Each structure stands twice: as structure tokens, then as C-alpha cells.
Image (cartoon, rainbow, N blue to C red; front, side, top):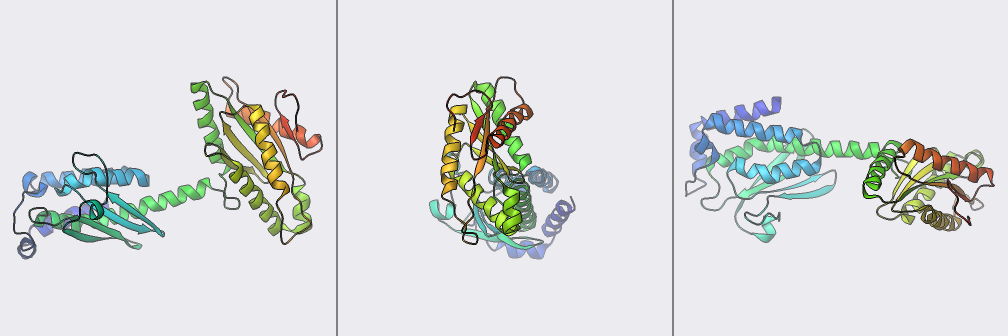
Length: 337
């Protein structure tokens, strides 16, 4: 709220300084009524405050970009605007929809013209640039001052949203394997289970555990153990469909969500995984060969996630008791691997 108050104070002070008004008036030959003149200082400041609150309530990059693209033009009294940012090495363009078309395009490409640009900065440094139309009759002096005053707020909001996205990504991605973390994996399972129940569709969960992983760590050391986990995770991710989800469940155990899949389909998935793992080699440990045991369970009506995962875990335990490097299902399958 302190940033918002500073923005509003700056707007008021700039409105009352005749020297700034005189210099700004020279940039436009045609006078156009802006929201500031149309509604008056107090009313327009309320619109700015409402916009600032919308920014603060936008917790994701997508929500923030949508708020800027759809609401900022009306606050500034312009038909179009664009923002180009480079935060964390990622380049992003935000553009307001074309009037009457509802589509967002970069005006510099689709609608070239005269543009005024303003730097966007945050407490961490430069964030990007905002561009607004600056042709005759398009950008009033008051709107120009408004953009300059709002730029710090936009910069801080964009930087904050990026930081939140990074923290969210770190909290949902396992740092060693690149798979989802256990909490994120369970949340995905819950969402898919609800969806499958509503759509009356089948869904299976596959649990996987590395065979003799403790012995691998003891013999080759933990760096090689981490390499084994990474290569196993790579195989799992490459073997998965776009609709599947792979999470590191804990230690050397992984859980794979298989939407619209039966136990027979889970068995086929386990065959592909085991076949690919047989071809994996380790340069620092040429004699090392990695195998896995797998267990699967298909969700039934009214089953919760805990019971579902427990069934798959029980099947995995039976696979280990039966000799490892094999697949077991929670229910009869007929011929098994």
C-alpha cells in the first residue's frame, strides 16, 4: 500500500506543477480528453487505486498479464499498449487486445505506428519497457504523466509475480530428478481422481522402486546414487504421455499417474520402462546395472487417494518379495511380467 500511496502523491504533485504541464503540452498538437481530465483528480485516483489493488490480487503471471492487458488501457485512456519484459532470462510480451477483435497481438508487428516508451523498473533493477500510442491525438500530456507514474508499480508487480512463480516451481519440482515433488504429485492424483470419477473414466497409478538402491549408494557412493536417480527419472519422463504425471514419492520411490488407463495399460507401461532402463549405462560405474520393481492399482468408485496409493504400494511390495525387477498389480491380471 505504501507504493500505491507514493504513486498517488506523485500524480497529484505532477498535476499541480505548471512547469511540467508546459513541457508535456508540447508533445501533442491535438488535445484529447484523458480519464484524468474527464473524471477529475479524485475520481481518477480511485480508478488508479482500484487498478493497483487488482495488480496486488493477481498472484500468478497469467492473472497479472491479463489484468494489465485488459484494464490498464482504460485507466490511461489509450486504445492499445504493450509491455515487453525480460525477467530471469525469460522474454515476455504483454499486449492489449485489438479493439473489437478480442485478440492480443504485438502492436509493433501488427499495427506499426508512433509509440512512446517508458522504462519499467523494480527494486531489483530494470524489468522491461511499456509502449503506448504517441501519434497525433493519441497520448495526452496527462496520460503521459500517468504512465510514467504507474511504471514503478507495474515493474514491481511484474517482478513480484515472477518471483512467486519461481518459488512455486521450486516447491513443486524435485531438485535432484526434475520430477514433481511428493506433495505436488499427490495433489495431481487427487485432481485426476475427481476428474475420472466425474467422467466415469478409468485411471491407474504406478508405483516404482529402485532395486537394491542402498547397496548402490554403499558401493559406488551417493554421487553415483544421485546419477542413478536422475537417469531413472529421465526414462520415466520420456516414457510418459503428456497427460501422465511423474513424481518422486520419497528416496528411490516414484509414482506415475496414468489417466484413462487400465491395469493392463499400466502393465504395458511398466514393460516399456523396464526395457529402457536395461539400456541405461553409467560412465563412472560401467559395471552398474539398474532395475526396478513396480506395482499398480486402478481407482475404483469412491476410492480416495490414500487408499489408491496404498493398493499400488502393496502391489509394489509383493513385486519385491517375488524377486524384484518385475511388475505386480493390485487386482488379478492374468499373465503378468
